[in-house]
Structures are given as C-alpha cells and as structure tokens.
Image (cartoon, rainbow, N blue to C red; front, side, top):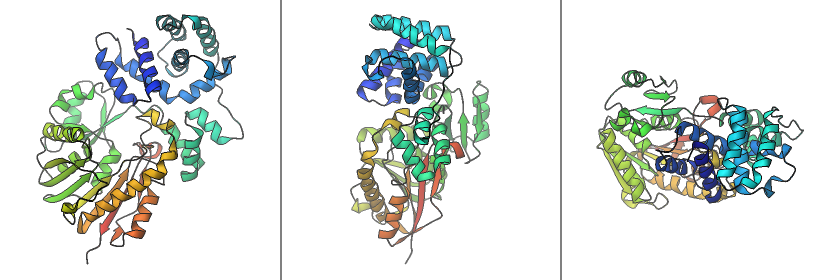
Length: 428
C-alpha cells in the first residue's frame, strides 16, 4: 500500500464513520508503518483534505458537469485528494497529482471514473482558484476558508466580520507543536539546546514561561526527551489558564474533567511537586492516562480518581485552595488541530451550556473562602463562555471576578482558541 492509497483509506473511514481524524490517522499510520514512505505526507494530505473540504468541493463544482452529490463517495475522495495536491501542496508536481489520482482510482475499484478524474484534474491544474466575490460575505468567507456558513455567521456575530475572518483563516495550516517544560527535571534553555542538537527547530514562547514552540517534531512520544519526562504537550493557552490559578507550594488543587492531565501536570510543577492535586475524570481508562503521565514526569502529588463533575461531591466541599473547571465544550477553538470539528452541527450547544454551568456551580462548592476558581473551554462560542460565566456571577453571590475574562485566538495570540475566567470566593 502506498502513501496515497493509505490516505484514501483513512479519509473514507473518517467520512463514513464521522470519526476523529487524529485517532484514525494514528491507528492507520501505526498499522501500516512498514509499508508507507512518508508519514508526514500522509498526515498533511489527510488533514488538508478534511480542512479544505468546502473549498475543494467549490473548485470541483466549477469543472464537473454533474452535481457533486451524484459522485460515488470513493470517486469524490480521490478528486478532493487530487485538487488538494494540485492547489495546496507545493512539493507535488501537477503531473504527479493527476497521474497518481488516476492510478489510485484503478487500485481502489473506481476504474470506471479514471477518465473523469484525469479530465477534471488536468483542467483544474491549468487554472488558479478564483474565490467568490459576491455581495454575500458569509458565503465568500465560507468558500475561501472552508468553514460552514453557520459557523462563519456565528463568529461574525460574536466578534465582528474582520475578527471572524482572521480567526477562521488562522485555523488553516497550523502545524506547530507546543510543549511545556517539566521544571522538576530541566529548564527551557537546556531543553531547547538538547532538541536543537538533534536538528529539531524550536523557540521559547513569548506568551508564557517554560513553554516551547516546536517544528518538524515528528512522532512526539518516540523522542528520548518525552520518554525521559522532560516535557508534556500543551498549548500555551492552557498553560496561561493554569498560571491564572496563582498556585503555590502546599496548596490543595482540584482539577475537574482532567484527562489526559496536562493542566494537572503543569499545576504540579507550579507547586514544585509539593501539596495535593486531585485530578478527576469520568472514566477509569482516562484516569490511567493521568497516572501514567504523572509517573513519566516524576510527579507524585497527583491523585487521579474517577468522578462525575456534573454531580456534587459533598466530601470535597470547601476543601481546595484552587479549583479548575475545564468543562466539556464544542471544541470550536481547536479547529486548527482537529479540522473535522468545523463541520459539527451547532444545535447541541444550547444543551451543552446547561452541563457547563452545572459543573461550574459544583466546582464553586469546593473552593475555600478566599480561594480561586477558574472556568475554561477550548471553544470560541460566547454562549459557552461569557454567557455561562455571567450567569454564574448573577446566581452565585459569594464569588467575584478576579480580573477580566480572557479570550485567546490563533490569529492574534498564536495559540489555540481558548477562553478562561477567574473567580475569587469572598471571605466573610
């Protein structure tokens, strides 16, 4: 099986099962490791086709004589792959993009469409993409940045047209990896030097200390630095969220909805591995991820337990100096890393906000007088963010804002899209 055939298989599986791209990609890359030439090429092609799906279909519609919906799904996938290679992969010659697409059709039982694929892709290769420039700005942005009109409309409503356009353009092509230095074992300059000695391009984050932005990292978990517990993967936005907790040694910290544990790990490092961290998640399998991560990093103050954040745990009432409610959310801030999220039906958000508020309300019960509570999401939907927090302040009189709400965006901050709010429990 060659790289394009594997990419075809992965894309069809994701499309058919509505599966998470990162999980399916990792599964297939591992399973067919011995047969493929470039995992980086497969990754770029798979993520690229998912990310640019609306744009690719717009281009195809200009050259097809029949509606796209009449194409056999496998033929549709091959055409999308071909257009993506032609227009968005500079290192792939046009001739290779066309010829390999035709070969792929024959390998995958679509020989009947090889003539169509050849004709359409050759025509597309000769012309630049002409993006729509109509009076409908929502439609224009949807096609250009491959974002559903409903989501473009929501972002425009929440942040205005200019910011929304910057935001959805910022979701495209984000390939940097952010890592948090394990300050219990090393420091940022030392880790940067070690990574650079092996040809890995990296630089210190300008947003938060002990954070490194890495390029051309390959498989993170296979690196000796990862195996030796010198870092864990974490976006700078999450690190800023943890920093806002103002953690100190010997505190008690509760992290709800914790798995896979990144924020708990960073918290423990801020506490110099002194104190107590309770890290909860709903499923035992996910708490095991927290335990194994803490062991790899040399952290021994984390107590990972199963627990439903939506149900009040009376044993924890008034027990913690700091509490984090990083609630389940729509994930609209991490579209750059999980491109299929942009195609979600947003109708579920209204039900989700009730769950988010309930978790925040429960979390507030665990905070000692004078303690801090942080609410966070990796969403940029104001219904999940400001609206939930405003409701909390209106209904929970014992808390006050500790600073302003913080929203981070890829095109402004160079981070994932992220929101957090800090509340202090009044001391009476």
